[in-house]
Image 1 (tube, rainbow, N blue to C red):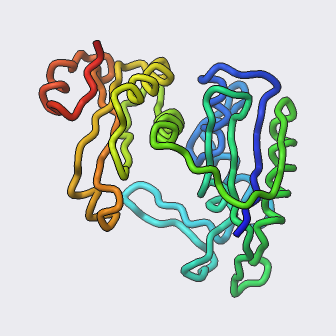
Image 2 (tube, helix red, strand yellow):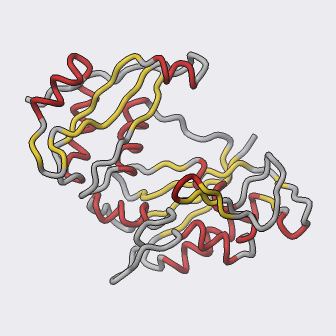
Image 3 (cartoon, rainbow, N blue to C red):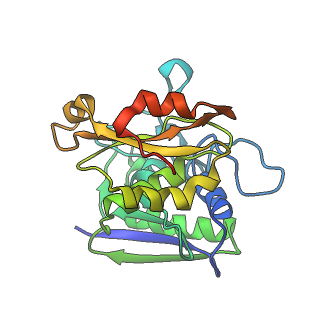
Length: 249
């Protein structure tokens, strides 16, 4: 098995908030990285549509209502915009902004024009990114495997991508093991400034996580808010989570 790695890099290390604007712009419903930008489809979906794949997108909207696809697709078919965002990494402390890892394979569709090879998508995506972000560096290479992140690095990148400055989202994932306290401190030292509210991390053994992952990931790790939209809830939150929460000194 091999993968195509499409990398988006800056010439110098950018502040985390600036890097995050580029990352957010890839997703549906996020702001693009341009002045006076409005909520939009996200660059991955715009790219998907620009190369003629709009009819095969499935989008879930309010009330879990599915709009599209205009064309029915096989069960194992993945549209280009989803394949781009399936495996991404977002290193924090380097010139790297985004890495897209795309498995080398071919997707067949009953409608021939919607069949594609991921190698072609990777190269087209790189050209698209170069056009959208001329100030950045875009690279494409073929690799044998996706680099495996440690739990600490996975949690750091996951929380970094999903934290919003002024919104208290539930941000959580299932894990094979728990974070060490020193790892939690390192993560919080890196990302706490990205939220307007005071945050920490809670983790515990979870029967729901275990059942959803066939016992492979029995632990639940999440961002816990010690203030909620500015309202002090530190004492209440510490009491609610008990020993499962990391207490900030």
